[in-house]
Length: 261
Image (cartoon, rainbow, N blue to C red; front, top):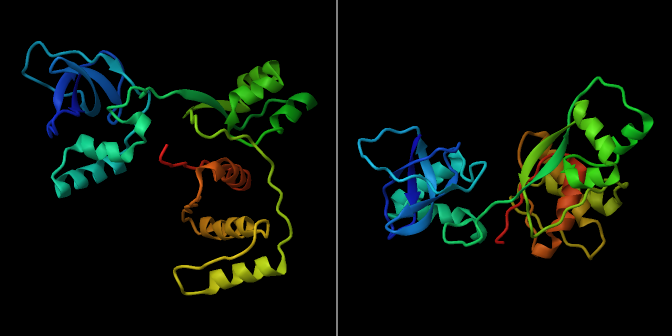
């Protein structure tokens, strides 16, 4: 299979064709030889045709899944045209430092997560207890620590499936249970005022432990119920694990984490 690849070299704006024997998708990174150097490039097209002979092979396919989706590629096209820049330069601004072409530690590490599935198989009381012990998705390693044999049964009977996710070395997230406490009068008043105002920005002021996060979560519930999305901004990266725990425990769905690391 022949593929077209963008490489980072002297701000070149055109692609170069390589042969690839491995499975690869558009948006993945590959390691290639270019001008007697080994460079990391982005796959732009696959299954292309070429009249050139002696086409160089791809040295390595780095990613199992594409780093760049269609939306990011369209944005990169716009940025490259508007700023008269190369696409690779635009791609670099969209990726954390460890995943950029110039990084020496650009290999993505994936880990297995357990996701809930529907099954009609009968479970024993102990198997049901282990299944209900976690909020899903959760790390397979955590599930196996409780009982490797029961984890195997849950997989074989179709109660859980395995989903690969990019391992995040900066934040360690564990599953916690969500407890919704009765709102105080002040919290109810804050939610009422924020949801009824026509202003685009509201300032919620309160001392530590006064319940501001719970107000944010209740407001987020209202937004999500309308089919919209919510963006949480955390002022300090050290607070990220706590916020991830609270949001995942409350909404039981995938969340995207984006930071400078």
